[in-house]
Image (cartoon, rainbow, N blue to C red):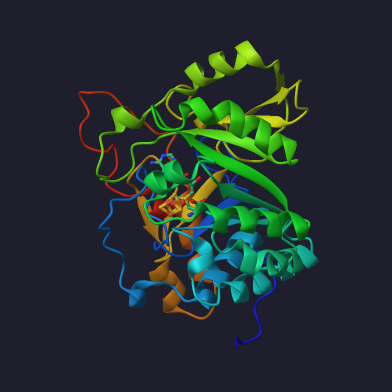
Length: 345
Ligand code: SAM
Ligand code: SF4
């Protein structure tokens, strides 16, 4: 379908990406669509307006940008969304990007998904060199699942998880901790996930985008969850790092790993090694700031990647020191108007 895709060999003008605070950028997250087959209450409003399809970069253009980043030292790519596995022909992009795994220019190609399409795609993902997938799942209860995702089907996700494990993919479960919704279920999610050989990472709700509820009603600090879990389980700090923002503990009783992503109670910006590309070619240097660099114009201006590479370098030179999310009663509007489904989780 495509012309010969470019290899990720370094040209003399390509330099590693280091930001003004000395952080090397080695991780790119790519949101391939803002659309989704779910409408999770903390992520989207029920009547979301999505981008017109004509505004999206083509899969070939997404490949070109990813390849430019790989040439400039990115070692890990995460495909996300919206729901990445609902984008048409998405396996074409995975197949194409897998060439960078073969040449070892890339260490890891991975995906964050709601799991609804995993039955269909797990084997294909594994064939493309994907080794690990993050699956978002906030509850094991049918009714709670429907009330959180509005449109989701738990059985479909659980079947998808089975398919992923059968295909040999290592699965990590991501769970957003929601006050009064799944807070009593976190213990059972932990034993369930670890019992199936899957790690679990808990996430604090972040104030991104207008939704139909007030954030303070959803926000459950993970410091509270951790204190509760510590009464039942022995949690010991572990040095495991995935290049993401989570901090990990080992749970002695299950032998599994539990992660905490705590942008509100613990700011993780000092070790930030990542940037985020949207499906329209906007590069966000920080999930928690409005500033973005347009990569679509330099991409389309020339078939050569020189303009694109310098636009990437200029963007990294603007990466801010950190975010400043706040959730409390005084802040009734989101810190950012952008939804998580735009920049990808
Ligand atoms: N649709 C895929 C999924 O759900 O895994 C990928 C995109 S989703 C935006 C990525 C992650 O962001 C999910 O784990 C989701 O739970 C999380 N997320 C979405 N909105 C969030 C918010 N406002 N605060 C914290 N996490 C959020
Ligand atoms: Fe869709 Fe993921 Fe957002 Fe849920 S969290 S609405 S699955 S993009």
